[in-house]
Picture 1 (cartoon, rainbow, N blue to C red):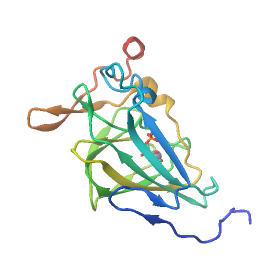
Picture 2: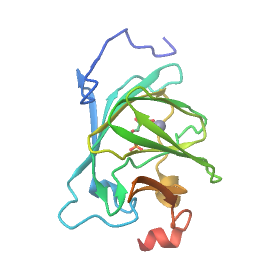
Picture 3: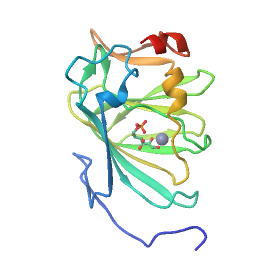
Length: 196
Ligand code: S6P
Ligand code: ZN
């Protein structure tokens, strides 16, 4: 079939842990994979710490299929900045996405290439809409794992390079009274991010 539709199938999602049955493709991201993404460097000896895992339900990567995954971000901080995902635009920029919060407390930072941004809440029961053209990064601001489910067109793909080079306009940091959104001093500052 030209749409490459798979046969119908069902997956069991553990709403607390984010694990799937059956598990098909799990990607783990460690502090070493996040080098340069937090404002501060991570502490010596912590490079192998797993920050988040993505449990994907793979389908053919066509526009007629819906890819989905569960992300589990561990609680923790690098300096004052919370553990978070790398963040990305979709490779096909106009592809949208939906996040459904399952457990934990988090933020979804979204930004356009020209610097518009918004920071939304992720928690059990939230449904976040990520429009096409908005880069997105999720941040665990709580003490428990942050778990959310994502659905997106099968051909959306990932563009990590733009965020790696430019960052997001804002950071989410631990303030005296809880999470705070602050300007990113290195936003679009290539020289600073290379030095950092
Ligand atoms: C995919 C979707 C999520 C992320 C996951 C990890 O479009 O937005 O499944 O891939 O939350 O984030 P990242 O930025 O490392 O891919
Ligand atoms: Zn995405």
